[in-house]
Image 1 (tube, protein in one colour):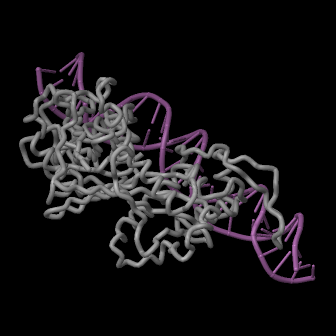
Image 2: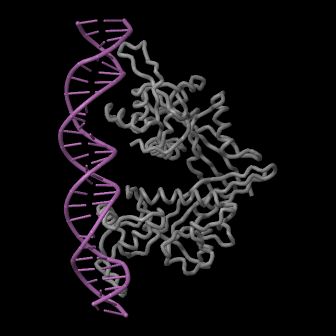
Image 3: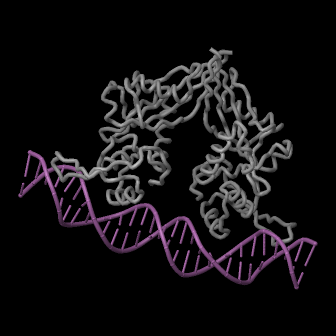
Length: 201
Length: 201
DNA sequence: CCAAAAGTGTTGCGTATACACCCATGG
DNA sequence: CCATGGGTGTATACGCAACACTTTTGG
């Protein structure tokens, strides 16, 4: 009885004001399940091998398990998604990061990808996991742009700031972002870089 | 390379004003994955074989996939949960239905069960899937008791009714529930017995 | 001085919550 | 006539959405 179990990973990052997905050769990175290593660990190791570096504090979530029941070969795919801050992806082949809104509808994993995007949207609306798309310090506008990129809609600046600050997830770092041809922005950090439930929107 | 893939099912039902789980022999019903049958189909067939009847219109959801990475044998469990109306469970061994709040903390699948309960709570708060815990026709009080049993808290009768009716999910059947030593209650049906997103609470 | 982005309050509206009494029936 | 559960309205608090101008910096 031949059953092959794979782990597939959907890697998300936000840069250039767009949500991107890592799709080298139009495929999701994957790995074959073997003995002695859990699904979660395998997912992390698939990701670290394509990233070429250790990944910490990035939010990893199991998305869904799909099956392809053929006559002589049962295939099971356990799919994960992971959020990476843009700073970490310098090492990746840049051309393999595809904007989420321009992933070809023809690739076989398109269904998985759409579902992953949907789940990501939900997740950022009721948890703090966006922290794992951002560097340690960031401005409120940068944070707002991350939300806008994921949710696919504009947010009101004043309402956004009031809401985010009222949640008490952030603390001011004291520093300012200077060097731009504009008024310097105050910088913030997440108090905790651990997942927790929060109603953001 | 020996990998065994199982499907496990958490069966939920609400009766006697309590959420119950089907645990014959303190175990979740399960089945072994083989060729030619998808995970979802296998989950349904496990359920139908313990139920001894065909199950329609019951809400089935994939919960999570767990792995047990031993040295010489990799085990993968794909867990589902299903909602059954109390009327359907007459055929089951009644004593195997355990109240959710009195499942022993010592059984090996306790973690899975707690997680399933948590996911069920979430689900009923933002979808209409409770329909699959109820018979075709029911009174508003019966519906309210279902919610109270799952959420584990009392709800205000007037607010509950206003909210539920405002969602437009129900239509009055015209009939009344008589025979009780009390004022007859109007009976309702769900307009659609299909899952859809609705913010209930 | 001009362009660019940061920063800041108020108002209206709709939804959630809290709360208590009368009604219809069966026994 | 009494016990049981069905059925109903209002007032308040709160959160969300809409909306425009001033400030600080770099060039």
